[in-house]
Image 1 (cartoon, rainbow, N blue to C red):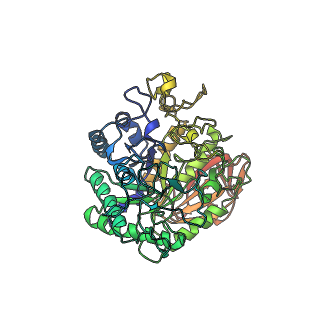
Image 2 (image 1 turned 135 degrees about the vertical axis):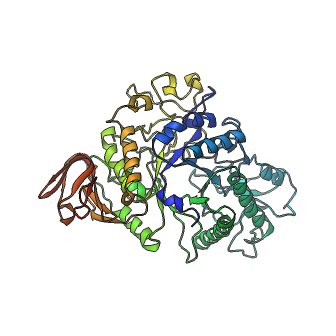
Image 3 (image 1 turned 90 degrees about the vertical axis):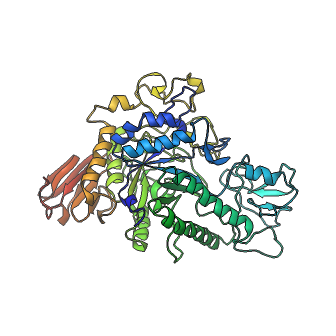
Length: 540
């Protein structure tokens, strides 16, 4: 089955602006990534996901694309990407690119051409235009601004945007098409057909250059419709069409969505679901809202917190629903990402990371490790608004996008540029974690991550294909993988105990702060461990 490799994957997300600067301009680049491929390989990961690397005015950190087929000059060239893909492949690492499917930059030639026109493109508009705004109210988006933007001319009217005003929405048609709104194109109209073909062409271009697939931004919002469920269903249908082509033309390539794919009763288009860091099922485990709150979020005590007042129930319910619908489907679960807090955020200390990382690498998901989380980099509050990072006054994404901390030299080894030229400031803490300081330290977060990935690789029951059976959903969280191994994690400060039949006769395999007795297990505060069940016997 094409893309079957994803179930065993461990992903590493790179925000390219902040990973490694090879030319001293203060911004990370592809050559910097090439120079650090050995570090990435040393983690045991086998897939790298890049945030958008394409030509862009960077109003929204590259999620406003002006040319899908050209690498942004600040990152390098198309040849650099091809070389990176080849060198990564030599190390057993695949590369996924971020595909911004639903909108472009206002600087994209497609938009410039339509903006300069007197009226609709005879070949079909690629964007959504109205001469007069609809009478009914239109919701505002996360930045808190209206969904329609007045055209700066020469074309008259308004265009629909996706996020910032500089991100005009591409036209993929509408489900509802009332007579008094003739600007709503049918899903199979010329404009939407042009855009569907363009998506396929962009994907083919990069797949032919060796990439292994795409993570698709806002994947289920392509069809704009007030009948939201129907709009989502039609967006999913569009991706099914692309998947059918992909399965024939590039059968090993994978598609990952931003979020979980809606179940419409039809075959699924994407190869996995993605439990987003920003949404409740993930945030209820790890978030303490250091980045702020968006309108759809609510504060709650996270489970992985020293106070021990959180709950796993919301996460477990969401996981159970996903597994019940599609038992073998991979689900990506990240340590963090470019849009939210890091794993180490607020008061969470390095000591607390062991339990969280153990869970993330043994739960049965496809883990996605955000750059810097392998050394316990912090989310930094109060960072400046760079490239649209503060998309809402109460929400700052810049704190999770700060430069990678490689060593003790200037700018933590990220860049030779003057500090004021850096993309974002480096963590100013004198005790900030670095790769160099942790490289040979067996007690470091870096060593922990490497051990966890190696354990996962060596123990198929701990990977993405084995079953997961929850034994205890409180403190400690305990679950059996593949009916062979018991995993326990205690994120709280106080010790926790576990009893029951699955604790009888267990043998420690990889533990920290776990004590086995005839009565069960005692897990120290912030303790964690993997133990072989009695039926499996002692490990070799």
